[in-house]
Length: 106
Image 1: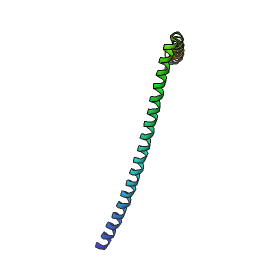
Image 2: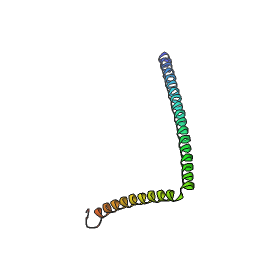
Image 3: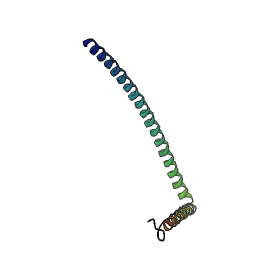
Image 4: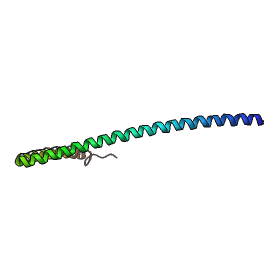
């Protein structure tokens, strides 16, 4: 009986070591993946910031050199966005009307 108990303890100890080693390996792999993701996110953030600075610089330069053309472009973009927004609101409004009013669900 005592010998069986010792055998079970040895087996449990070995299993615990395997589980511990496997968990450690998974933790290391996860840490490496997190480091890679962080590095990629930092690179993307830096690229986006650089492109944003260049875009602001280009708009500023354009506005200084040709203010009326720049205002015209901004107005055209604003009108396009407003038209798209209105079309979307109309589409949603039709869907609301379709499901309200005369139809009863009970």
